[in-house]
Length: 260
Image (cartoon, rainbow, N blue to C red; front, side, top):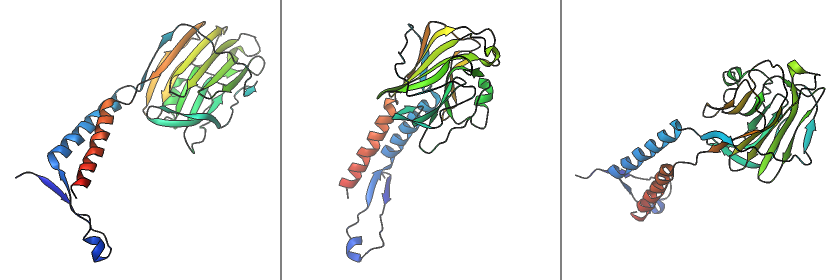
């Protein structure tokens, strides 16, 4: 006998309304197959990387007129709207905080900045803020208190974050390091390193991306600031199997409704 799962929808209403509600029939083997396919797809997407990083020919986005600029040690912008939303690792971000120490924290909805400051990448990813997402560019103890600046420029499809800064070890020496990160609304990220003049540093000058929601760390460079070099992060699209699973469930609900 075919396995048929009957769902009887009972509403606390008048007898006339109740008689209008019929049993919804769902074929159990088909339902189980769809659920299995969905779980398989979800498992694949959970274990697969959210994107890939690699090098690319050097390029530089002209700063033009910056929307914000500062000259300081251990300062940050505070929470600021991107002007667009971007999906990274399955989480939607709409704002940020840029820090003088070479990182941008991406924020979602009502999230507030962690205000982490400086350190090494292991300390950041193992801290109480390990569920946060950071774009890192020569992340260390940096300072533009004597020379340089940090600032950002916002566009309709991207945000460009720029640093011209010394390491704290080199403070007041004029040994400049110039680099930028561009975040696009399609989730792609570009790191561009123009100049590396440092002589010493405190931690690990880490450049890359950390996705707190998936606990993925994408490393570009460590213990080094490149010069005349560019790198990029390319997000992986949502697996087609997930779309098929969703379409299958929608179709099944439609068939169930017609069978009432």
